[in-house]
Amino acid sequence: MKILRFCPFMLGMFLFSSFSVFAETGDTVNYVNVLKKSPGYNTGEKQFFPAFTYQSASDPNLTHLRLTYHLDSVAGSGNDISRAIRLLEWFHNQVPHEDVGNLPVLNAENIIKNYREKHISQGCYPLSIAANEIFLSMGFKSRSVICFAGTYPYSNGGHVINSVFIPSLDKWIYMDPQFNAYIKDEKGNFLSIAEVRERLISGAPMILNQTANYHHVPSTIEDYLYTFVAKVIYRMISPLNSEYDSQTRNNGKLLQYIELLPAGSIDPSVDMFETGDHKTWRVITYHTNNDQLFWQKP
Image 1 (cartoon, rainbow, N blue to C red):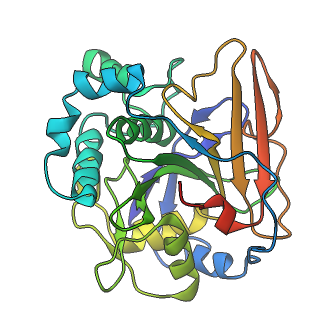
Image 2: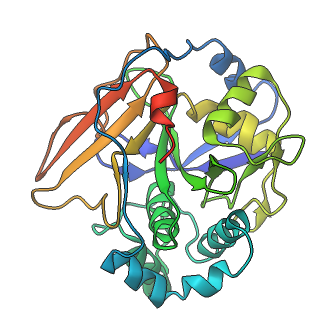
């Protein structure tokens, strides 16, 4: 029996708990079929939320991150997509995944430092946050993308990945730091998160990079894409402001998100990404059914 490990959110406690997706025939729901039956998007919906922002690499915190970890050398020379892939792979090898409680300070330096000093691994959410800051520090426009299943009233598992804008391709690219994963089509073109979702629905072919892995065990496209990703790519949430230390929850912090839902979907009110007051911080979440607005170019 094949088992794929990942890190869903534990609602209300903001932890990541253990979960296994069984790929063997008959053990699970066919999530590709579930996704195919989901409603479409409404591209006629107008924008009613503030514009996404992306912090400049000249920010002092991002500059410090870049210099501390010699990220210019990590990225190396070559085109932007090859540099982004090197950054992804480097960070994937810095901090392994494990289902543990989040650190109180969620930024790349603290996440890397804690693993180097205390061997504390992290869940998919902190890994995506750290990867996002690494991309930003090197001048890439990047977002963390929180993905949930379409089951209500609870999220029933989730995963967090990154969407990185590649100027030479003029598009967003799917990148997953937990699995060191990115996706191409049958012609070798890099795919975005939106295109991966579309191809899961349409059945168009996709190719997972050979270096994708979980704890050095190679990932298979059947387990990773058609079982795991297909389940959690129903509703997607991104921070409105992509910047250093944006997800640390401390006194007086306002966290803002944009959530993309298929038209007609019911948005659950039970998870901590919905608008409301949470202890000493506040969350505002804007919702849209227009995927073109959610994935607008920076």
